[in-house]
Amino acid sequence: MANDVELQQKVEELNWRSKIFDQLRDAMRIAPVDGGNGLNDDVNAEVMTSIRQGVKKFRQGLDGDRRLAADPLCRKMAAQIDKYGDKLFADPIEVKTSTGTIIIHPQRTNNILEQFFRGFRRGERRKRGMTPCAERFRPCWQICP
Image 1: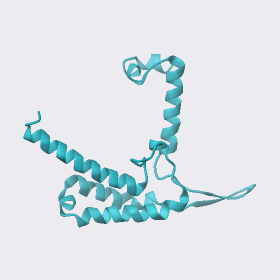
Image 2 (image 1 turned 120 degrees about the vertical axis):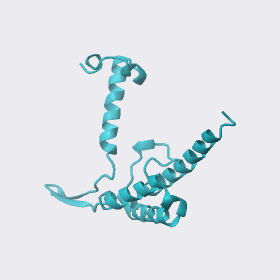
Image 3 (image 1 turned 60 degrees about the vertical axis):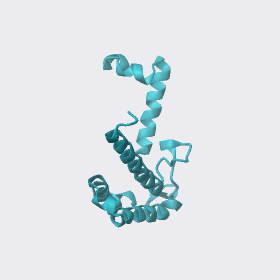
Image 4 (image 1 turned 90 degrees about the vertical axis):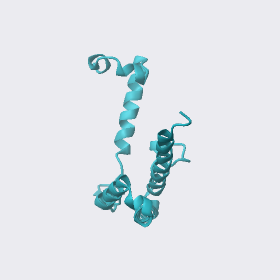
C-alpha cells in the first residue's frame, strides 16, 4: 500500500481538505480542534462579530486561492456560505417578560437539540447496559419500548 500512487494521492487530498475544514471550524468556532468540549462548546454573544469576520475572511480565501476556486467541493461550500450566511448570524431577539426584558441569541447550529439527544441516548444506554455498537444489531422494538 505504501507504493500505491492512487492511495497516496487520495491521502494527500484528504489532508488538504481536512485542513480547509479545520479553518472553517476555527472561523465559526464550532468544536475547536484545541477545545476540550467538542460539540458541547458554547459561543457567547460577545464574539459573534469576530466569528462573522472570520467566516467572511474564510469565504474570501476560497475565491482568492486558485486551487480552491477551481475545486468543485470548495465551490459548493462557498455557495452554501453565500446562501445561508445571513442565517448564521441572526441578530439577538429582545423579548419582554413579566420580570423584564431579556435578550435571546439564536443558535447558529442545532447543538442544543443534539446535546439533548446525546444525553437521552447516553441515559438509555446506561439504564439498559448497552453499548452504541450493540444497539445497532437489536430490533428497534427492543431498544425503544
